[in-house]
Length: 129
Image 1 (cartoon, rainbow, N blue to C red):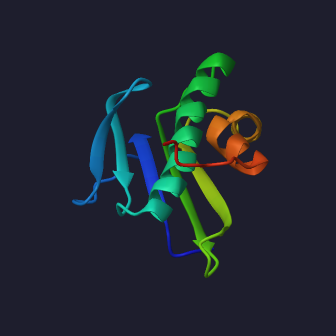
Image 2 (cartoon, one colour):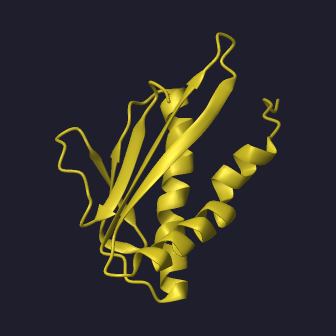
């Protein structure tokens, strides 16, 4: 979909890439790994991916689904005026749960994830003086 790709991962699916950065994470003991360039475009996509990853763990816990690991990749492009052409994301989950249960989990996450929900609704951003 685009050149501004990021990935966040935790648990059994944590990145082993030498360039990945590790951050503490409330849902996993070893934290999350982040693969992203430090540009505004990448950070926007990182916000969406990070939110989805968090919600995979949170919603799985509420549904009683064991998650051994998760990886979310988000990507997208921008037009010449830097208007986002949209963000697409994929989710990989390492879990012993049935495929139907995982699909229900991911559907719930897609409906509930706060950052993707805010981006879909649109938001005004302005400098405060």
